[in-house]
Image (cartoon, rainbow, N blue to C red):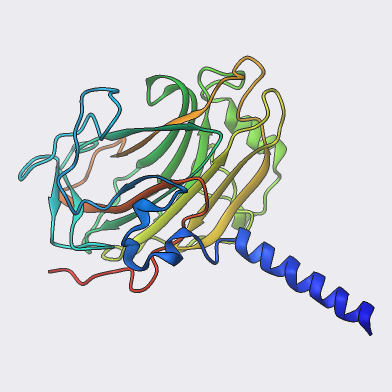
Length: 305
């Protein structure tokens, strides 16, 4: 009987550990509405747009850079809608334009980070035909341009309303485009696990929720760098708190980049073919941390005003 009880306890603990890894609870669960989450010792960055953005010059620590914010500009802070608090960042995308603002933020160089943010697209949203948008990125190592870095982890959306994560490493062994063939050869996939596009990690844990225009959508990406020269790097993607991709055997740092660290995050929705019309979308509740963050605790969406 004792042995049976012990075996059941082990199974329960294992299930709880697996549930925690899948993102059932995180830092945000301790801070309803994200109030006070920026003071948590595991949090490296929090931006809820409740105050005016701290803007600094290019690649200067201490705030966001490479973005213009203000009424009538590509991006503005608004009270029209919010995932948390009362305000969010609104992107004013014009017809034919590929984007309406890019925002970077330097973070403490780290081997492991979690990057969570909320996105909303207007109810009459039309996805541009073709590729994109790139939405957010985590960068590591040397940075020349978003497509020319030692390591770039993309969170991308598609006209199909799907959320995907992909990898590029222009300055490393596999190069910028080498991940397409690498992933196809390494991970045979079932049709339902196959995201749209070319070089995305498969959905090997569950199929993500579709993006629904008019509703807030939570994305979280976790990156843990590999031991230099080894295939033990980790990437996970959660969509609305559901783990959809999980990989623990990725070569994210080659032997020539032993000092590479994750050092910058980026939010700049970029539509390759350009927007089919003038339209609006929003971002809110951006958090970067050393531990799993998870969706907002309590009511995640405030009604539009």
